[in-house]
Length: 354
Ligand SMILES: Nc1ncnc2c1ncn2[C@@H]1O[C@H](COP(=O)(O)O)[C@@H](OP(=O)(O)O)[C@H]1O
Ligand SMILES: [Mg+2]
Ligand SMILES: [Mg+2]
Ligand SMILES: [Mg+2]
Image (cartoon, rainbow, N blue to C red):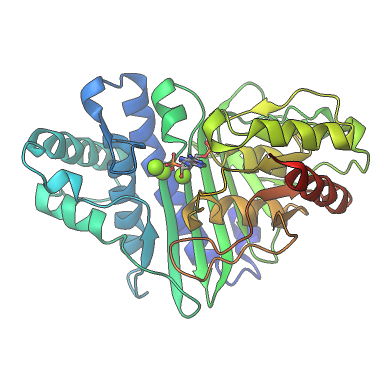
């Protein structure tokens, strides 16, 4: 489909074009950092989860591109990172490194003739403090989702969504390490062996994928199986993010035969949306509270590809309660045939949980 046909009838065409540009540019910075990541590029946050120079750099670049490309829009963004740790004593070197990475990425891209100072970088990071909510428009950004995968050299995603009057209306997922070709033979395309996938969707317009560095977009859809025996399921690579005793008991109840496909980040939602697997299970420990940026982009890509995304009680995810997701524990994504069966198995497994 050409760019021109893509925008016809899409009320979010301008926002989608800006979001794709923002995610693609941020992904370039991430790819460069991942190729030669150093110990000094990584910090530990107060909650003991990691953050890298690329998480900060990606957040700044996404905000910068959205503001440049949509100058007449008021700008509110709920983003994962803040500058608190970068404002502590001893962080000068890391801020300098982040600033250099951002400025070099801007120069190499050539779209904007500008250079940011260290203070510009810190205040751009802090621009992500919006509380979102049910009214107005708010971007939702995970500058690197799957930071642990990113550090390991595995999958990660730059994930950007748009909330409009309480509903996620647009999502873009940049997955630099995900092959463009689906592993589902029924969805095989002419994409060859290229690595780097950009998934995107706007409400009512379907979901598509193209090469991260640009190619003709292709419509995608979730796999259509109605038999769980033929289904495979995705779960987190990190064992601490989703309880494996529960996911394996759910798979057993469903009769799923294939072993789980373990992958970091919302790349799982992208892979599910194009039919690489049939079910995504995320059942964190009871005390864990989900954030909106971990699911906004991925969930609209799956629903626009014909799938469903629910919490463990079968409710839709509610993205308009602020920075945290208001949901019953657990997130399940699958197609419309399998959802009732998976929900039943999830609820049974949770009842039996020790
Ligand atoms: N103990 C925990 N339980 C569940 N999720 C966790 C977690 N610690 C971190 N996470 C979240 O899991 C996300 C990665 O998801 P996945 O498991 O699908 O790779 C992380 O996103 P970030 O990497 O953006 O911080 C983080 O928000
Ligand atoms: Mg994080
Ligand atoms: Mg995340
Ligand atoms: Mg993140």
